[in-house]
Image (cartoon, rainbow, N blue to C red; front, side, top):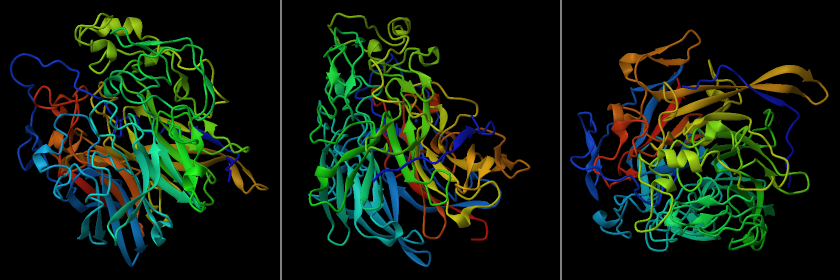
Length: 625
């Protein structure tokens, strides 16, 4: 099956607001502890939660009624479910009159000594928040059943489990999920651990369908099913194409190409004598080498930074795995456009941009919105990564690293000679040796498909869905897409004022230009982007003349400002009732480069501290529904 893109031009509208992984991974805490007391982090008064492994990492937590979330005129927000443990995806079964809501809780996934089973009775304790499971709620948000897949023989215990989708969408059929042992913190422990599994809620079983998928910085993530094929987003194994110390100290697996590639002459310095080529193990330099498709994968058809698919009707599903689209840093959200949509026949993809870390650190790299499809000959199309960041080449000065606590040259291996020093004294070393961001490949394997739009840096555009028709009113047009933007993890400074992220973005596709009567469609479409739902104190909320939300104060994640609002939105999906459901992962303390009050409190607890019991499912409806 192939998909062709319709003849159209997507024009980025100047009206979009410039105000990241999800689950991006740094393998170890690299910022040196400073002498004296822990940094001055403000915890707003009120109800709090913490991580029992690191009890100083307290956060404010009270969703309330969502009154500190501002949305456009004509819409309202409410809490559907709360007190969850790191939910990442949602699926529905039934019709608008009677349906159930399935939520997957991811378990581990972010690096920190705090994110561990120890203080919760171990990985097989049924109350351990760091082990994945599926929960089922009725249409009113009442828990019907939990702990599905949590027992021995269920989901892999280290997580994260991310994707969840029914074969026939609201009509049910087989329930699929993705999981991994990416959270396993021993050297190389999570490599090739991602799976696509079949979840049977009645029998409480989790049966592998596809095993041995690549797993590095990013595992197998979101899932969708169409025409008998299962599609999933397969993240990159590294931050920017090169295995560095941020990848399990250099022990995690390398990138796997979907097509034959030729490496550039460039090798990348980790500061301790380790020089690495892209698509190679850490410390292996092989400039100019031809790397064959799927090199290092456990099975033909498996590769990284790609959308993969497999035929569900085949006798051996694994033998049908193939790349549908590739050349992404971390593709996450995937959704086929509806019939009669300007993007019909294409898969809309959210892509997370590169971080300032590792052996090839990158600053200011934007997130991207991509339209994916196979080429007419059945080969995957190619979107430019790791040498194209959005519309620009990696060597553009805007991407030059500034020097950060996650960069390899800021983290020398004790006792080893080399060019590294410690943060922040390392900054001039990084700027001199890692600028510009040099190419990994000698040349692209095929013509590059450009994104349809770019997002602000470190915004972490993740989940997405197309609007139900009944949801369209006011600023929301028919066929609109909604994108959950998780927000940064503090590796770099804030991306703007106000800071974009920790919100939902609205993407309207507006017909423009001449109408082609023969083809029955317009030749061009304007893509209009705006913040749809974001945090703002209730007393500081207002709207402009068009009904768009405006905040007359600060807009930050809920635990930082003590708000009844959103922390880390990772998925958005429309239910059978026509409502938009937002999956909020919960509170995470981070490096604090963008907001000091989000920083982990005790030195050495970071880089990313998960706080159990702070996940929320929000429901957004039209007023009157």
